Length: 481
Image 1 (cartoon, rainbow, N blue to C red):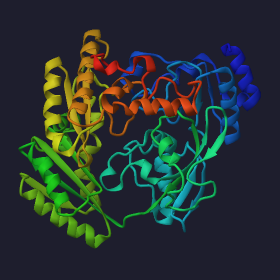
Image 2: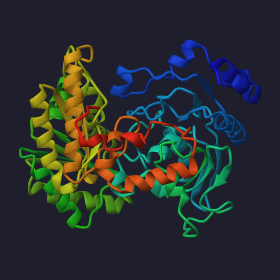
Image 3: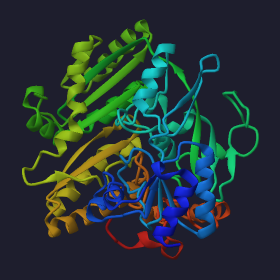
Image 4: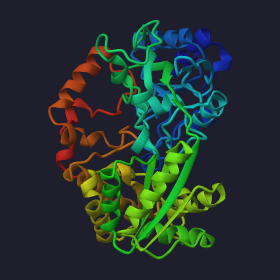
């Protein structure tokens, strides 16, 4: 179907006010935060903004009939081209569908549409003394639908886990337009082991199996108290050992963050007034719960950290906590400023490493950066082994772009070699699918089987998560990113 005819058909289904097809509108949907998107343009043929399950179903039936690719999209904050129309077709923008349908306080759950922004949801839930725990770090802009599609986690995954642990059920429109409800059609239960766990199948599937149109989330009571501890290390190896000491003591912080020397330098150059100490590493522990337990755990973590750290500070004072956390809060922005002629690129940025390999991974990433002459700022969620790498290059220099692609490829391969994953929270998208065979082996064939069963025409977000079947051994050779 030609683009003009497609626009005409969609207008008859949704009305003109829910269709975008002018060149400037389409260009605004052709990118995300990823390095790959910076170097390529993936322009859709048309954008639709449905706000009902019926509208989504009608669009999917049309697309299925004519074999037109459909790419679901939330806020567009991704870093892997996951919400970009790499094969053209329809982009389905769900960000405007932001209704909080119901807060079921008695059953500790909430029903929302995919466009609800994470921070707005938790702001709404606070009046009930509840919250949705995963914190992806982009809370002010990311949508819950995007979090479910990518199984987001973030700063507090150590204690609270990832998004999948809170999704009790989903309403999903399948590629052929059929609507299903997972987790029980009328269920309000928190526990349900009836039937196959289709909910978990769709969480993290990055839109390649269907369009998520409604989400039932489990909620937790909002903690009454919080504290922050900063520990400063002259020896990088000592930092992960402290984390293990804390776990062995039976303490589970809500978050544990690390900044290595590259991140410390970047923060101090970006905001000198923060004045982080010159060190090999800084750990930040966040503890939450009831006031008495937070105070006890804070003192105990302080005692344990002092065994290895050069300096330790613990506080429950809101002003001082904000000051202690400030260095971590600006790290991502600081990384972009370490070179006057360069900028931070989002690629190879969220590998996941076994806890006992975090130090080795940080050392090796520094070596890889030196090999290609590229500065890399390292930080991340050390409590669950999620290492963030921020390469800084001049993206206008083709030679540096080529070196960056090689560096990114080595970072991904290093993660797999160390027993980790190419991504801990930002997803696969079109950027990391080439490593699927290397990481998953024969399990990849099962993924292909599921994809074919639910999407036999291959119209749902093609080019994402899974490699093209004819090229599913791609990671056996160094191909760049």
